[in-house]
Image 1: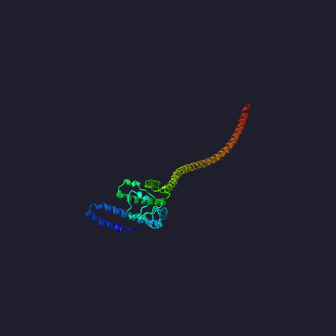
Image 2: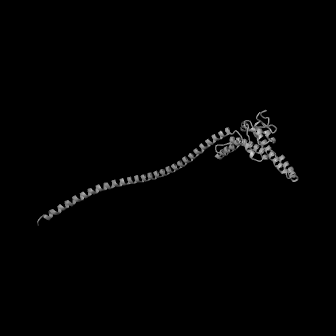
Length: 266
């Protein structure tokens, strides 16, 4: 982790200077801004030595790391296209910046205060590097807002002359995939909802079938008992009919036996 002892020393010295000279406050703010940016770029310098995406992006590199590249620009040198910048390069932080294919013009900075332009330009370079880093750290489950915000940031950087085409194409491809993923996620939720509904309906149907089977079993048992009772009654009916015939025949015989003596004259 980078130490900020130098910044603390500046704070103590600047408090004394500001008391003696009120106009020195603006200069103090400028020195703090450049000093802070210097530590930021020292951190980026460490990232370029270990992070392959930063190395591949060719946006930030320690001075002299790639030899005497014609596109490398330090605070003491100014390339042809940098002569049109709306500020003069004074900060030593430029020694840690390597532009490669990036040739920003920073024209929009003309609408800002002159003393802020160089710091804002360096901030744009930091923003570009952070965006490249964020691109390599993206995960499928990250919110889609990250992609949209990155595209908006690219549009801002493009107004400053950054070549953002390859990164924008990559982000658009990822955004397209993310959109398809979201659509499929919605479809998955709908299918799962329908699945839960069908499983519930299936459970109700199975319960109804079970109840009907129980009723059928009860009816089958009742049918067996009823059939047994019917057979018993049928046997009894047959037996009673036989008894009725026997009784009728005996009555008929007794009637004849009664009539014969009654008909004989005394």
